[in-house]
Length: 540
Ligand code: ADP
Ligand code: XUL
Image 1: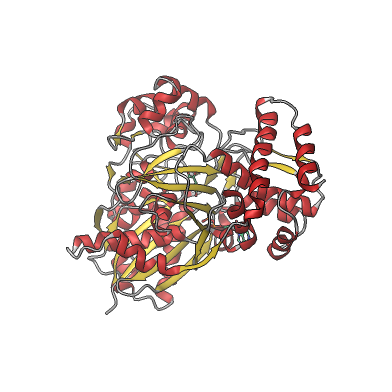
Image 2 (image 1 turned 60 degrees about the vertical axis):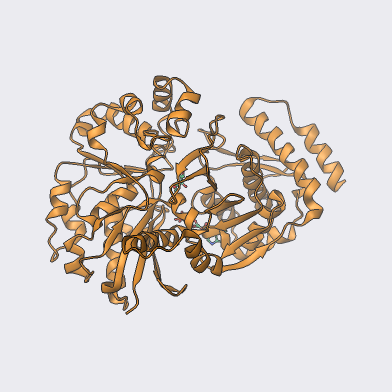
């Protein structure tokens, strides 16, 4: 009998399941449900409800329905569900789920003859959940930051400056705008701990990885910080689940799943975490020297930290890593959806997009794009607009290369606080299938880049975390290194190396990009003379 380990990933656009075995490195099962396609009744686009430009929510009941649907799919597609020994999960970070006083009772008394969705329909004290794409809480960010003693103090306490999408400012806004509904809320979960609770049949804890994305957890002590809680909303402490280590087995699977889908009653549920901490494991970052870039709905740049290293400038974050250490992260909202917008507005498919990228020269004849199609997190841009310098929106060649170079130059520019120069970059996420985009990343960062044969490393990381915790549980310890060698390093299928002839060009272009950013965002000097000089030097 093959023992199986399940990792789930509830991302912005879909729910993915990956099953791995203990002794082989095969992926035993993979399936992804796309929210918009499978559940049109929730009216989401790319998994979200755009309530206005700054207010972005998702329906939490859709996540419940997706969980149910993926288990149905597994049941109908020959997965030996009874052999699954442990389950862990991953979810988009920061989003909150607001629950009323019926939630836990419902979870404890689920009827296996009825659907999860019908039984959990009325457990929400807020029907939609603000997610990481929401940028509507600048006022609350300022209020919390002031109450905690300013930016630096906030970073030292919580690991990050206050950010619009972080759970604390979002909770504060809900309390200020809907005090009655806030008082009817008995639990506030993250997406990760909410889904873990359903599997567990009771309120699940929040792990140190996802908890650090709330502006509520003390990053040194890994406990809820009373000052941050006081700065956020009254009676908040009792509404929050407890915090736990990411490797904790938080209990056995709820009887509902045993009866309805045939799980073994001893199936262990391992704490869920955020998609980025899960991906840290899924791409094998358990030591210094490597970084990862994830090109999913968001683009993220992250690395493993042995010691707590804060970004006092305030653009980056520090989260708990699944290994018990830390990780650094920078998140860009203008990731895949912005690339898609440019592609679609030019009437291209991905193949044509890649061909154009391949046929246009690095440096793009000095064309610069500030790619703010959506409000941006880093640098902070609340009123988005794509800015083009030296070309217009109809120029196919110009736009394709400019959006990719703009995104990557910005990433290079804003990641220099992580002062360790990486030796290699692991890439992951949906857009990492695109080798032309990857070539631009390696050229700009001047570091070799590796990718795996799968793009959902958050789900793989969750599956690995379930295996890791289970083996500790049965006293059969496997180290992280052994697991990563077997399940991650063996999946590396491609290495792309930088073209050194573009070293000086991209050195100059990062500086040129910064001048354009400063001009647009900080009223810096007109960058046009510098752009002309760049054109003369490289394309004259
Ligand atoms: P998430 O996990 O955040 O839901 P994924 O990591 O699955 O998202 O990435 C989905 C994105 O991948 C899509 O929005 C799409 O833009 C992008 N994508 C898919 N194929 C390509 C491609 N060939 N080139 C560039 N981007 C792609
Ligand atoms: C990280 C972030 C996003 C989400 C969605 O801080 O906001 O990466 O986790 O994937």
